[in-house]
Length: 279
Image (cartoon, rainbow, N blue to C red; front, top):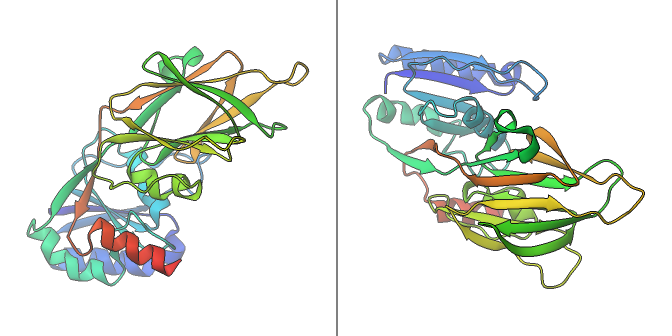
């Protein structure tokens, strides 16, 4: 690796480490540029130039997820530096990144593929298709407290949930909202789709681990005659779409993966154990 692009969520807060890192890379013969990621989805999307060997994100898991969205299909590996809170996706902290520069410049690392999901609301067609590294979440729309969701897998009815919402997660996203909803923790190298109801109103609703090649269809079933029931669909917590009665959300594995730089500092299980003990 010789050419690096740094993305940070809060440039004013992280300018010190960004400029130090850029200087360190350039002093050792590498090239480096940096930019600030938009604070929210309403701002103009950051355009990542072609030709870079690695994207280093400085912040937390949200910064990595945003970078994965920006670079979908570009095949540029990501390396996360944690300056956030939990940082399950971050390989290094702000001290470790400086000691890792020589390894990166000498190509002493591994690349780990992380599967992504794609989903779209069927009536809107391909223009509404979005991708997610962590999860696609359906939650109750404005003025609605509970949803009745009918879920089918590969064209066959699976279950009808009365719940606050539904999480469709990748293994990478298993430590995000899925974990908060008591879903299983899954090794991010695995290939599976996790289906976890949010606050199900029955005792027998559990998370289900589906095959990576399954196609999931979710439809809202009407419960009230005089209320317009809708669901909000969020892709990695942003890029929201609205799901109305009679419309279907279709979700399956995306064709492209997110490539993560792995330096072997901590294994997934060691990192999880450390984070859980910290909680």
